[in-house]
Structures are given as structure tokens and as C-alpha cells.
Length: 126
Image 1 (cartoon, helix red, strand yellow):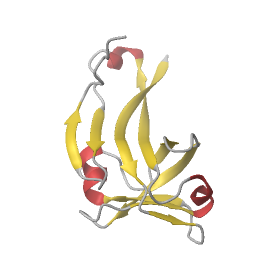
Image 2 (image 1 turned 135 degrees about the horizontal axis):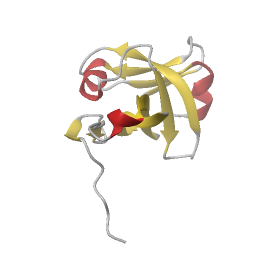
Image 3 (image 1 turned 45 degrees about the vertical axis):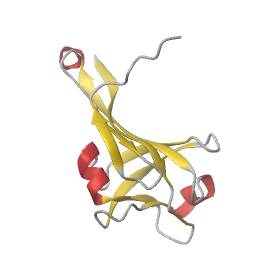
Image 4 (image 1 turned 60 degrees about the horizontal axis):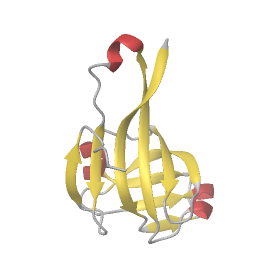
């Protein structure tokens, strides 16, 4: 059996551009891609914290250290500059691989600078 697990996450990325007249994708600062381990042209899921939209596209590499998060093409209808996104990539793993698997979690500030990284989501008390 294969299980689908969170492999990489950019948490609270801010949209810097929304380009409707552009071939579809999401341009992401190359440094952020590297930190999360997301590959160019890899399928990603975007969860818009600001408006509740959820959609799928693929990552393209923007200039390193640019802070760019540009939602392009048809997806531009689902995110505007200033919106807060959670950007995720997933992996399918055999059940035997799950026990030793850890995701790459990258947390960002309001300028898309990395504030911390982790391999586990902290459990919050109720």
C-alpha cells in the first residue's frame, strides 16, 4: 500500500504578484524552493489562508533571494498580492518507509524570509 504524506511546506508565504496573462504556474524564490526541497515543475498544492481557496499548479524557479511568490495564469483568479499561502508538496511512500520519514517545513515572515525550519509540526495544547 502507498500512503500520501506531506513532503515539503512553505508556511505563510505572501503573494507578491498575481499574473493572469502568464502561462500557468507559481513562481517561487529559488532559495525557498531549495530550503523546502521543492523541485522546479513539481506539482504543488496552494492553500490560500486569506480567502480559503485551494488549488493545484506547479512550481517554477524565481530569482534567488527575490522573495517572489507569483501566482500565474488561471490560478491568478485565486490569489492576490498580499494574500497568505501555505504551499505544499506531497510524496507517495510505501508503508514501510513512513516510520522514518520527515517532511521539510519552512516558516516564513511577512517578507518571505525564512524564520525557521523544522521536520515536525508542533502539537498545540487544546
